[in-house]
Length: 425
Picture 1 (tube, one colour):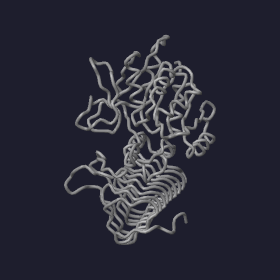
Picture 2: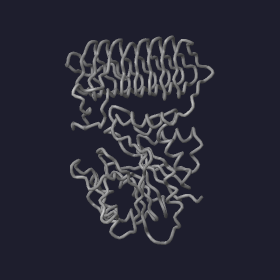
Picture 3: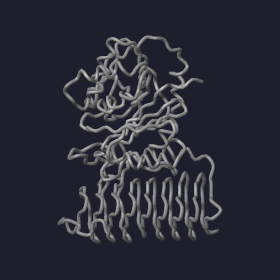
Picture 4: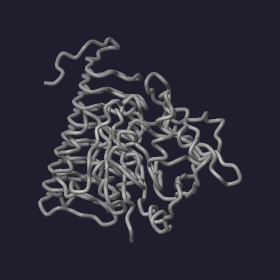
């Protein structure tokens, strides 16, 4: 099987819509960061891999590559001006890429075997493009195809929910027989907007042969912080056979329902119930009478006695005690006092919304708890409303009811907020 000459991964986004979580590229799912997962899988189908990064993430991505066997055919390219968006990223990469190219978004999960459909087609000397779309029955803020007699004639970025040109969402999986004709079109557009790439693509479709491929496999994108839960679910469903490291200490009174991955030095106490698919990272302790189901708990965590974690992503060095955590994302080094709980369901049964840059966004989830940023501390008996996000390095005093987002570095008491002077300690 031949390989596509060039694979281009766009990983320079600033992740502002992902607040209060860290850079999307570094989220670990089943022991592997998302960016490494993308590079590894794309390398099966592409000879050379180019990753467009920014000044902030180039060093950690470089370190990840150095600790893997993927460095040889992978080159990092810095996008200096992030305001130029995806179009600017592609122009930056065009200095290094000649000929055919496949472009993907670093934060989209999909089944790369669909690329065989491109590889199996005999290349000729004409210019053509392959575009992939997925039929969806919910609204996702992305690009949508407009068709005319089964032919793609336009890509419309973020149309209104009630004015979709079709129910086919454009996946960021684009193949160009020659990247130069896309770059030439991008350079014509002097005005930089959110949809500059889509406009250039729509213009190309008027003169270049295009092929539409419907994608029916798993797909998801990390656009908003709650999307971690949907991505986590995809990876957990990959666990087909349980693995329990020989160093793990598991009470004979515990109940384990597979499939479950239990890593080195995990300790599971009496009358604990773990319902798979689940992942428990190394050195994590699950105290007596706790319930963990359909969740990923990373390394060095303490899940104190009588806690319940359901369908949630728990980062590294998280400390819980008699808590309920449902449908939530908890970043590294978060501490929750006893009886602090997360509400994940609205009384009226409607979908949970959350604020993104001051705008209320529908999560398209019936259940959604909280998103808590790194190094935050939640006092005992605190209640957090559905869809509420808590920033990095936030301290919430005991007994609070949190119904609105809290920014980074805040000391929160009885709705009076002040700067948290204990930040970075």
